[in-house]
Amino acid sequence: MQVNNYDVSVSTFPQIIIEGSKEKPVLVVFWSQQCSVCHSLLPLLDKIHSEDNQAFTLARINCEVEQQIVSHFGVQSVPSVFMFVDGQGVDGFAGEQSEEFVRLFIKKHTPDQALTLLNQGQTLFAQGQLTEAKTAVLQAVKLAPDNNEIKLALAQIYLGLGEHENAQPILAVIPEVDQNMIYHSLISQLGAAMQSAQTPEITALEALLETAEDRTPIEYKLAIEYKQASRNSESLALLYKVLLTDVGYENGEAKKTMIELLASVDDPRQVSEYRRKLYSLLH
Image: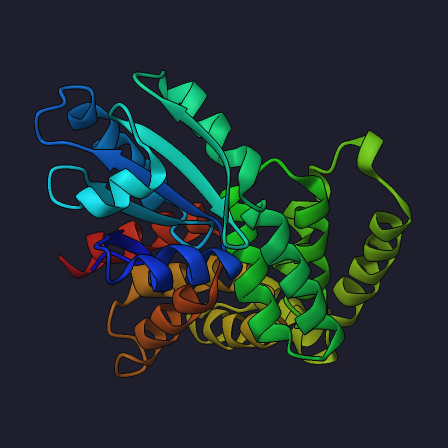
């Protein structure tokens, strides 16, 4: 289903373009079936729009059908493209242009969605809505994977959620130039979180494991303790080791625990690796 993507008629023009552009920018393209350039421009605009359909609305006007709109705007050639903001046409171009030109034109008039999502996430975090903040900032990371400000915000949310293992690899790759006061505060929080994650139960089980002859029951208990302490990597490694010994261990509870844990881990590489390993055990 296309979102914010319309074929506009004279009856829908006021709502979609005039009123709609008061909420977000509207890119309007005048085109014709007889125009060869239009047949390459329209798919390009669809592609750019699909990459982030919340940044702007895409509106197409068929010049062969909507003569009243064409006459109103005095469109002389196709394709003609206009950007509407706050109910007004603010910029435009005509004719064949490179993809780079088109992308820069759109970027000039649309908000940076990654920073918008970052601001949303930071507001939600301040309001104590940590799960919702995590969702927003994860989306921002996807749009701007090299933005260290966004990475620090995500690490802060992970620490707030008690997911220090997810915060650790993020903080480990922040370059020195971006290691600001927030970074150093998060490093201190991470150290405290990792120290608190070494519970007496974990310490006792780790000691017992060193001398145990039958290691599997202890490894399973330790994997559960690691999971509860958000030490996901260690928990996954032990659960996989248990399943290597007995794929149906504890009447399938070990497998169920591993599947549940994989559903909560945000590291796609780690999830992919262990899903592949688990699949190989089950087939």
